[in-house]
Image (cartoon, rainbow, N blue to C red; front, side, top):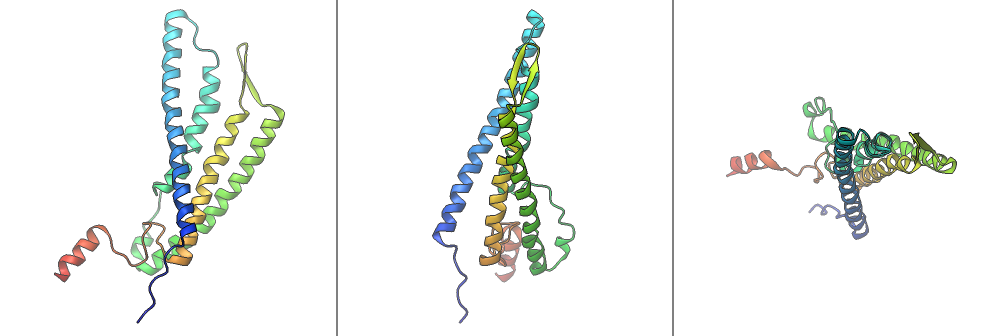
Length: 198
């Protein structure tokens, strides 16, 4: 009689749940940044049309805050939803075990790259904070260094999630592409197998 598959320990499950909540909250913040950007731009255009002068600092805030937040903060959420671009032409032609191996070990270079991006992003953000980086638009000086933390935040959350999924792949044979145990059938394939067995 074969031994049952190991189940994820409670601490690992708690880490996964906590990381999931943090990533979703950060993604909501990025979504609110999109709404704020649209509102500010709309008000700026309306004021320019009505009075000839828009909101001070709009161009800088949109360029250095909203766009950066929208671009980098949701990186972890995209990984959570498995929504990053995937080139699965080769793995679709491979045996299931081979495809699992390629997908699982592919997490390692991904995590190394995003981890390096996180470290470098934190270093640059701290440097910008130390010098008090700012942009002058008209007569207004707008600090831009806080926006520098958006990149390491998004990349850091993605790195943490990739590391968690790599551990799940190594220890519990969880397929990173589906989040399910290796060999577990889902969707149409499972239904087709059930109908054939019946």
